[in-house]
Image 1 (cartoon, rainbow over the protein chains, first blue to last red):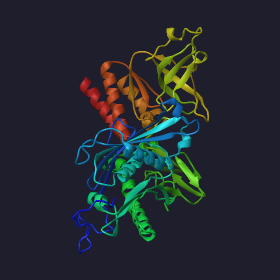
Image 2: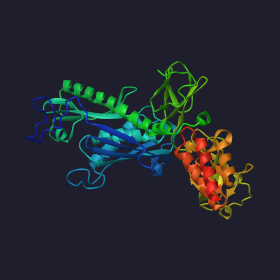
Image 3: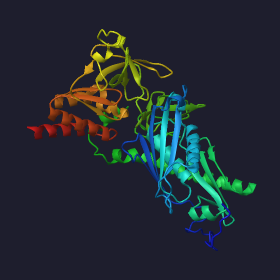
Image 4: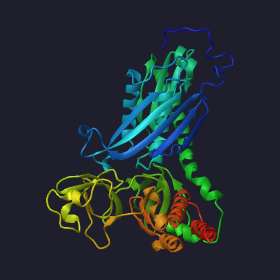
Length: 259
Length: 230
């Protein structure tokens, strides 16, 4: 943050950003649930140029055994960036950054999952970043919570996530790569829309109190929009079939079987 | 927020955190409450019955329940127990006392070895989620021959159908012997062609579990198959 300089104009005379967005505008977000057949639940997220895949296994027996909690389930996340996800090849394997993101994602998700329903188990969440363009931890958390719901894990709500930050002296939502690299600050937020709780909050860079408050509100507004797209993705996974299916006479019988 | 009349809303898909009712209905399975409000805890279909709102899950792990008939796979053998994989988050120890044979201490592997498949009943599951299974009841036994098909446990009720109508239709049309475990494991035995037909039908049920007119579709598939076979 800060340190680096560039001749890129992060905000032009018309108040447009590098990719033509206004400061309040998010990058286009697309979510698809249930994309992997072998995992219990999965989700694929395309957020601007970010491409993130999340898979959920479990609840299943917790290994190693000494990690088991006799009263609740463990939510274990693994965030990983593919070697080809960034411009210069990323050295594969866990590093300080991905360990941190794994930890904060686990903690954010633990907050909404009914862990007490599955003592002694672990719920494993794998987040793979296929292509990165700033904001991958938000994209990862967003994908992970859709994948958890898709896996049929009982939850209090979905976690939506979005970032805000400061670039070219202006507060803006959902920073892109150039804004993140050459901007002044970045605040990723994880948010539970139903209860208005914050389950993830970090800040990289320096902000005044007013800037921070404005940024946080921008990020939360972003989370609300993300939340709607998450819900839509989950509903869409099961809806089209029941609508497209041939409507035959024994409709009633089939419906009663479900109930 | 949503209409609480019982006829409507029967196929409404809800996601975790959705408000189901705030008019004082009782919380059913797949829900949780905060104050007087009932929310969905699962991705599923909202169901209203009399005064209870619940969510029928569309996915999820099998959670053993007392009285469930399940198909288990022997995973491990010890002196007085078999460890059975029952496709749940927890393994189930099967004690020698819960088996229809008289087994001397240390002779467990003379009766069943890892890889064997058994038909079991869940006797009990306590709050710490320790599963107690038995093979002593009538009809429970070691399953030999046939094949195992794994499906999503949330689709089991569709494979069985109302009052067993679907499974009865499958059995009649294919002539196979079929056991559907509540844990999503299905054991099928019969002539090879018949097994293939049954597997195809079960897979279709799993894929189209929540589409309307399913029974009719399966009936057509089974009739088609039998005509081609002749």
